[in-house]
Amino acid sequence: MNAPPPQGRSPAPGAMASSPGTGAPLLSTRSLSLSFGGVVAADAIDFELQAGERLAVVGQNGAGKTTFINICTGYLKPDGGQVFFDGEEITGRSPREITRRGIGRSFQLPQVFGEHTVRECLLIAASARSRREGFLRPLERSVDADDVDATLSLLQLAPRAHDLAAALPEGQRKLLDVAMAMVLQPKLLIMDEPTSGVSTDEKHGLMEVLMRALDERRVTSIFVEHDIEIVRAHATRLAAWIAGRIAADGPPAEVLADPEVIRNVIGE
Ligand SMILES: Nc1ncnc2c1ncn2[C@@H]1O[C@H](COP(=O)(O)OP(=O)(O)OP(=O)(O)O)[C@@H](O)[C@H]1O
Ligand SMILES: [Mg+2]
Image 1 (cartoon, helix red, strand yellow):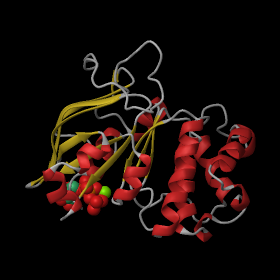
Image 2 (tube, helix red, strand yellow):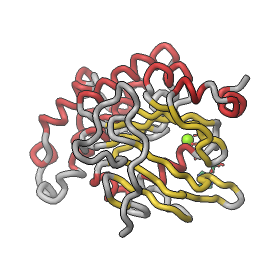
Image 3 (tube, helix red, strand yellow):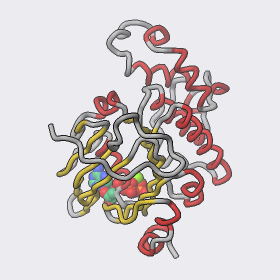
Image 4 (cartoon, helix red, strand yellow):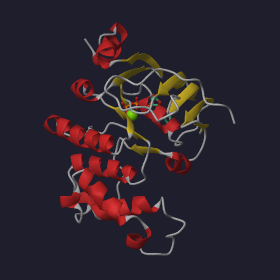
């Protein structure tokens, strides 16, 4: 297995400290590539993320944001290149294996179990962690139910604990999707459009709940976001995707002032 790439950028101002004693990136990719027919969805992407960063990802529809997430989390295999997480190469590993190593994710369309209650969804998600010892035992006794209840409170879902997931409004369904990733105790959480489908009025409140929860559990994060006001308010760093490549990456104010980003991503 190849050694992880050397140390890259330092954490953004205001971010949490890196993992003690390392300084190496938490997540990195080297020359990551994937094409679908003639469409280049990932174009030799070199990327590094330090522990403690809150990276926002912007880009037009079809720019390759979800493709990048899907490769990093094992849902797609790249044509070429490598992914490293927490000091080890994870290229081509299964989603389950990558989750176990500490990358959680939420989905553009929340993946919740609609016919179960909110609390049951978390118990089922948590059981993926304790599968071995709890295989034939009732869920309630095979998982850390205290952590499930703490996570429900952390994401302000406790009042909805016994409602069916299918009955939740979109904002709370997004929170539930994140909560299901959080009970697996990730080091890094990648959220694909956590505010899509949520009204403009509710977006900031939703992001505040999410970001507070991630801070409290010291989870590094990447979130895809189309709303520039949300990016300005919540990101320590911004990366702009254009046609399968990272066209600009750095402090949000600088990236948002980049002419190519203004032309291709934000619009005149
Ligand atoms: N499984 C697939 N099969 C074929 N083409 C795909 C597949 N997944 C993505 N693509 C194509 O790859 C390109 C990048 O898609 P991707 O979903 O990564 O974009 P995105 O930046 O997440 O867009 P959006 O903002 O609409 O979610 C698009 O042209 C898309 O049609
Ligand atoms: Mg997408």
